[in-house]
Image (cartoon, rainbow, N blue to C red; front, side, top):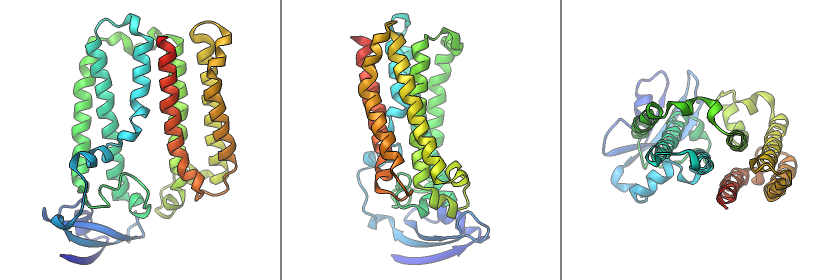
Length: 303
């Protein structure tokens, strides 16, 4: 089977096709979307037999939809917090449960992002957006939505017992200052990553009528905002190393990280368009910085 069908709102069938609920043996793959996220949205689907779809192993599909390549965004801060507070931890089972809850939360967030961006049309317009498991016909949108609910349930089932058993960790005053600084450092990098992704898709977002921050403030200001986040990360990591062992000269340990951040700032400021090839590579560079700087901080904390 290799047929095409075009549906237009307010047809009730359109959502069924987008969700993949037309038939267990047929996959409706969106090949053209017009007026997305509007009352007169029109989508053309290619109807393909499921058995004719070439897809990788199911575990590889799960790794892609859960975005395992981005796990550092959620797990690294938790691992570093555990290493910095190792002397105060009495039950490591709770630590393992907390880290596992972060893992499932990570999966839930990206499953939801894939589902929402598919339904609103962002990933249907942006060929490089999301994990592409829905757009490639590997999984139905309704399946990804159900995975989100399962991951969220797993997150809560692991996190709630930890919170009930260790309620004192909800009181921010019990955490040492280096942990706050580490948290802010990773927050700035994560916001920079999200900001770059939004700048890359700002043309598509504008076409879809999605008023993200880069769409509202424009490319130049969004570019400056990302550089500002990099600068905040550099300042924070300097303070972290300067006070974490209470010797100011230890700020020198931050120089490799700061040097790379300065490089990213200079290259980012040289970009003149959201379609720049460098901009497309920047999210991966931020993830590398996030992981390797976190690994560096972890090694410094145990040496």
